[in-house]
Image (cartoon, rainbow, N blue to C red):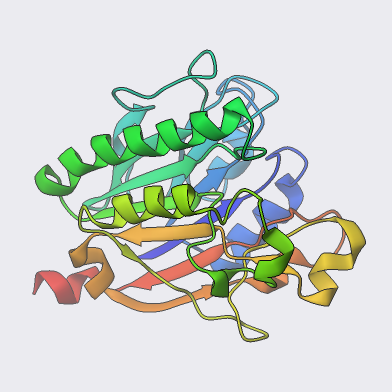
Length: 263
């Protein structure tokens, strides 16, 4: 199975690029974030022409997640028990079973600033996600939680730790919340970089950050033991961040040999 995750920063704005990428890379399952569209206006037909079934969760201009699959898509669930809102519940999580793997696409709240109410919402949301996943990690088949976590796991995952002093994405509470997710039995699948030393997945649009290498690794694939053992390759497709009107994120592609694990 080829599994991928990509914050597309508007599925409609990025649709020509997404369709071209799907045709070239041919992932079996794709998790999308920040689709910025409702379920009704999601481009089901265009993506379906490439052989993908779609499960989408969205409510308009903001947020939004989806799972695209050529490997079956069953037991779809939008949101999760206990998911907090700000103030109402937002479209930030969707799960489905694809070829025996329980796949989640998540878009963790940004947090804005350390003194913002949105920062508290981010920590509350991550804690609720951990509670929901801890049940699934014990009770379900192989599990992969993919998406934009808006947390850089370590200082090595940002271009310059000093540039993020007193900022979100790197604070101890956020990293502890991510660590709590990992402690339920998940592994952070660290992809290889196609260029440079670090496998960054996000670069700000401003100040030439992409070309200057000023990135962060905030898009993650967290895998249960069975999925982690099946990983044969994982990389950041930096090429997808190039060209005209790209997303500010690059996709992660993970190749799994699930048959070898079940043999």
